[in-house]
Length: 278
Length: 294
Image (tube, rainbow over all chains, first blue to last red; front, side, top):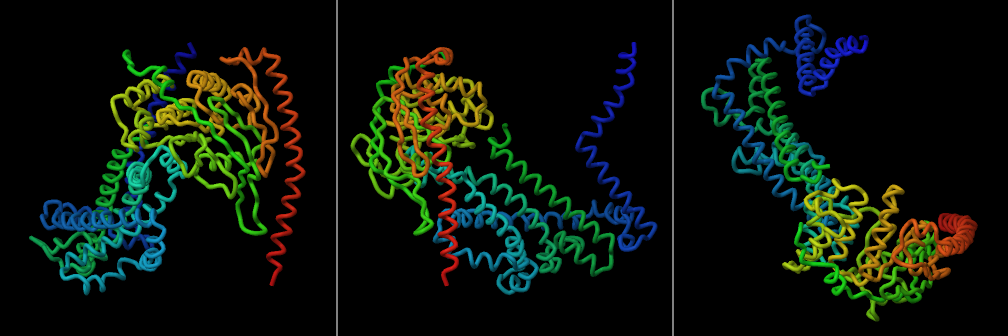
């Protein structure tokens, strides 16, 4: 009888445990706890963190924006800029990185310039970008492009270098030409690193979107000044002393970045089935 | 897979076993005083249609020798001839099975096996049939669409054997291919691999550090000395084929050969043990001389 009693007693406990094991449940708990702490800190006016507008204030400012075309236009503008800058970084960065990884001569010639330009923060490029490019959009795209390209290139180079030398030896022995080795060994071998580079890279593009959109004067606004992109939205809110809106902009960028990375990650899983199936 | 057009006779008739002759080959690394000669004046022959096993203490330069035979590196002096033609660079007539799987992780078993024919633009109906036959031969017909990471260690080795065999090499070179497999799988692989050899009679060169493996598989056993790598002794392993694990355990001749090989190996190991410390002393001396020079 005791065994029966045991299972009767233990079952609910087990269910609670598995409920807590669900990562989504954990994520919800984590976010809820963070918001509760923030609300509390803001209400009690704790030092430093108390200065931030409370989540309730932020929601108050955010809810009306959900019906605001300008706000969504900002999402669209920023996404478009991030995507085009990021695509340009991929289109230029991946072949460039592959060339640097496969050709010693090309590497030795280009790497010093690459290494000098790499540490320059995208924000520092803003004035130069404005001067260089004929249109505002091109300047913004350029700054975003700079944010992503170095990470993508570094990952491509590192990935190509770490391909096991035995794969090349085996391929060579079986009669592969250089082109065949490039197509069937180098490209698939470097693909996982390209995906990692892109995942990190698209995160950085959202990091630099504020700096890039400072260039924008709110251009393209339809109904409100918020049409200049999410980065501009933050900058504009700061100038206009609307602190809750700053936080709205920050959270919006956070969500946008998270979605972009998740999309890249899913695409990555799709194109590298050999890593998924173990 | 009921109808498999290609069969063992098709495989056998396509094999042109080669004879590989290594004459006075030397190979060293490093410059001037810091130079170590890994292979010095090494000579031996891989006889046609024989399974030659090379055994020697680990770090004796066996892997260097394999890189030379495969053509990944060039010897400093001496010659390597396959069927009386000098070896230059890697080619399909000498394929290597490496210590750990070198199956391409991004290709399925099927694509891995067909890598060579595709690389050379030799895809045909016959080639597909041969791939199908080899896939069955290595018992992976149900794993054709699996990636290497989805295969067990033993399966990976068998897939690699198939990938090499479809290219029909004159010589197959195997660098400790069963290292890292568990004892049971390893012994099953010995039986499997030796049956495969008996069926095809391709010239095989098998490198190992495992004496039981060496005697189980070999027609001829090369016992190597430590650095520099040279052939210390050649034993003809005149044990009957086909060989099975049980027959080998009961065979007195096998034990006799094992004793002989062990005593030779032990001698070599002792020599290299004492020589090793001298080599280290020489290195330190040479190095300090270089540093001290103004």
